[in-house]
Image 1 (cartoon, helix red, strand yellow):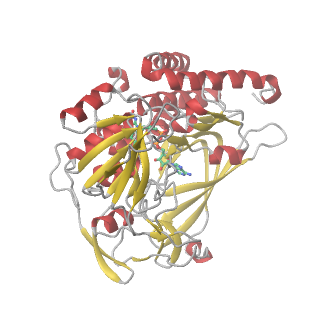
Image 2 (cartoon, helix red, strand yellow):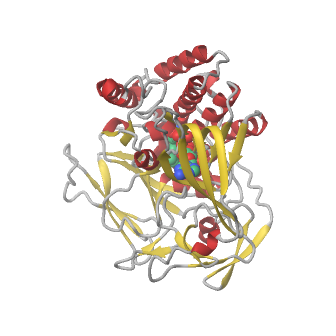
Image 3 (cartoon, protein in one colour):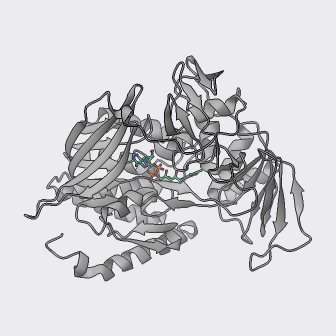
Length: 496
Ligand SMILES: Cc1cc2nc3c(=O)[nH]c(=O)nc-3n(C[C@H](O)[C@H](O)[C@H](O)COP(=O)(O)OP(=O)(O)OC[C@H]3O[C@@H](n4cnc5c(N)ncnc54)[C@H](O)[C@@H]3O)c2cc1C
């Protein structure tokens, strides 16, 4: 399953690592996640559902679902898709339940206290740009990400970006990620904390009006975990999004993967998800990932799209068609079948009300079904904190209501990127910059802050002015309307 030749990527696989899966020796490579190494070794079933014990496999690849929960060195419910392998590590499938939380993981290390001016949660394009922008204004910033490297979704995007040169058009996502990582390491004032998940957020404002927030995070070390107690004056949430599921019989079979998960397997770890894929969704993600599958040497049987039109860029659709991949609009998946992994699927035409047209069912022979059916913003931490959220379909679901500086209903709490409404990496970078400069400016830092803020707002306007920007633009207009409607009730001058 390892990719050996690729037109764009070279897989520098590093040192071989041996670990144990259910007492059997398995081989992987340094820096690889447990789930990826198991996939490359042919292991598809990673867990079982709690009630019916149905087999579950890899799905999101970014630690946002529970399909890959396993017991690792005695610790249950470890997200194996974001946990790197280690020599002699013992990985077990949780055949009969959820396991129990253990205090022992925290025994080895003392709690660490972090106190900084600005904390950015999430080191994807939005978070990296927020941290850089705030630090360049002179603020002191802590950037926290739960992965062992920064980059978010950029680290798997091998295609070239569109847009203006200022927004890195013409560069591949992986190159942009490298560039931003170098800057993060060289710009003074940024403290990077990796392999650390923020799990709790509290509004610690004092009665005398001092604004101060508190986050609780868990940092993972080889020999145990450490609790982090984080205090700050400003927070930027840039936690990204999670992939949507689609309801159909067999949707939980191992082999039904999110498009982002497939990208992670192929482009980050150099592992083929399967041999023959049915792609569901002809938006940009579905089209791009289909082409990337071909580049990785995987057959794409077809792309099905429930809408009567392709919603992604036509240049991507044209590339696929030139490679002989048919795209069926007004079609969807009816079911996936197989005993403990995908062995095929049935697709069907739909009418104008999206109801299946009986008699149009067609069998598709495939071992992988890739779902590219949209993303949902990650707002759980924001909600925990008491930030006002609203359901905005054009933004992908519940999003934090925010103003034009990306500040939410809570003074000093900002949001950026997919967490503020699903869009794309280019706009995530601009929103991150806007949030970072605004947060720093609110603390009194000003190295041309106003000019930067208006440049960012202008760039966002331009990005959203084209036909492909129409849906996010409508989403952002609704968010702006809701923000204005909140008026002084939530945004009293004292709170500003
Ligand atoms: C499959 C797929 C294909 C895509 N293709 C394209 C494309 O072709 N072109 C394009 O422009 N855009 C594309 N996008 C969208 C683009 O990647 C996103 O819009 C962009 O990455 C959003 O950036 P972000 O920083 O908001 O989120 P992300 O890049 O998702 O970064 C979020 C970061 O937050 C971290 N995080 C989350 N929760 C926590 C927590 N509790 N504690 C600590 N860290 C946390 C995560 O580890 C992650 O690193 C694609 C997305 C997907 C999923």
